[in-house]
Structure formats: structure tokens, C-alpha cells
Length: 312
Ligand code: MEV
Image (cartoon, rainbow, N blue to C red; front, side, top):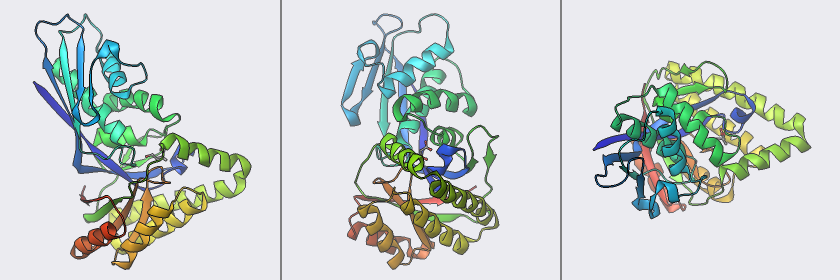
């Protein structure tokens, strides 16, 4: 049996702007992971793959699954990429702790874990670059026009300053910092939130591009504050980025409620993270107030909170 895993992620700055070529800053969330186990399935025909994902009630043969199914797509892509003759029959079991459709990169993490595990079981350890490129193909099937930030941060598992088509830049974390993630429980597909911003931009390109330019400056400043370890200034940037995300219509009532609660409980800054309209928000906190902020978020309606430390 071969097991591989991949972390969730949060975007600190630059969601949506990154779809238009602007930079964004994302970090892995190591404490929530997707795990894939691959084993041989003796007695079944070569080339057959049994897929099981207990969390989503999937239990089917690969050839019975829809072309568009993300788990099946990830397996098909890696088998095609590895080439060669049909592998022995395999069983792939997927378990993920990452909230689905919440902005934590669950789909990218599932693809990365499955791609890594199947390749490793068949004797190949793939580079992060190759894993990320394959996972990006699955992301495109699922999310329409993704920027590629999710598959990249999840495959490299390091804080990243990312702009599509530009060389990757890793961010050195000057001083570790603590985030509390609050899940609003509301869900809206990334594809729809991205489409809504596209429509807004088509209707009023000047103001939306002005917002994106301000977000770009925030991502760049944010990177510098992470490198210098200036957590207070970083918190102020969370708040400014949130105001801009609200201005382009991707915040939501539940998210706003959580953001207010986090700030009242002493967070240094708070914003939505990911596609928005629902999903998660993140609060930057001093370690001493982490529990207080997490409690305030749950009281304000968060269906779960996750604490994560961002380190180099
Ligand atoms: C998704 O995690 C973040 C968005 O910027 C979409 C993308 O980058 O593909 C909203």
C-alpha cells in the first residue's frame, strides 16, 4: 500500500485579482490534509481501478465514472501521463479533512494526493512542478478559468507569491504567525463567484481594475511584512483587502458577521479567503488571543474553526 497526502491552503491576499494576472499570496494549511492510499487489487483485470471516497460515498470502478468527475479525472490523467502498458488493477481510497467548496483548496489537494499516490505506487516520485501541472488540468475541468494558485501552493506546500505565467516565488516567513480560519458554512461554487466578478468587470472595467491594482499593492506589501515579521502591519492589510473584496461584491452576510466577531475578539485583521460569497474567512491573531477569537467565531455562527501556524 502506498499513501500520499496534500495540505489545504488559504489565500492571504489577492484572490480574484489573481485570475486577471495580478499576484496573490497563499500558504499551505498543513493541519488539514487530503490522503490517498493506493493498493493492488489482485484477481481483477489489468488496468481496472476501483475508487473509494468514504466521505463522499463514492465507491465505483474508474471506467463507470463520469468524465468530469474530479477524482476520476485525476486518476485518468496520471495513468495517461505515466504511459506504458496497463498497470495491475488498483484500489484508490481517498479521505480528506479539508472542508469541501469552502476556499481551502480541497479539490486541488484531492488531485495532488491522488496523483502523487498513484505515481508513487507505480514506482515514480513526481516533482512538485509536474504534480501541480497535472492537478491544474483537473482544476480547469472543475472551476472554469482558475488562476492555478490552488494547485501550485498545495503541490509545493510552501508560502507562495504567485502570479500566473510568472516564475514562482517562495516567501520567507520572518516570524511565524497564527491564523484562525472560520467556516461560514455557506457555499457558492468558485466558478459562480469568479463569473460574477467577470460580469462586474465587463460592466465597469475602470473601477474593478482600480480595485485590482490596489489589491496588487497589498499583496506586494503583505509579502514584505511577512518577510520582516511585522504582524501588526500585516493585520491592517487583511482589513484593507477585505474592504476591496467587499467592493467587488464577493463578501457575504455570514462572512461579514464572522469578520466583525473576530475583530471584536482582538484579531489583528480579518478577511474572507478564496472565492468568497460564502466559504471561509481568516483572522490573523496573536497566539495569546487565538482561543478567544476561535470561540467568538463559533458563537457568531462558524460551523468550524481551524487554527494554523504559518512558518517558513
Ligand atoms: C480560489 O481559491 C481563488 C480565486 O482567485 C480563483 C482562482 O484563483 O482561480 C477566486
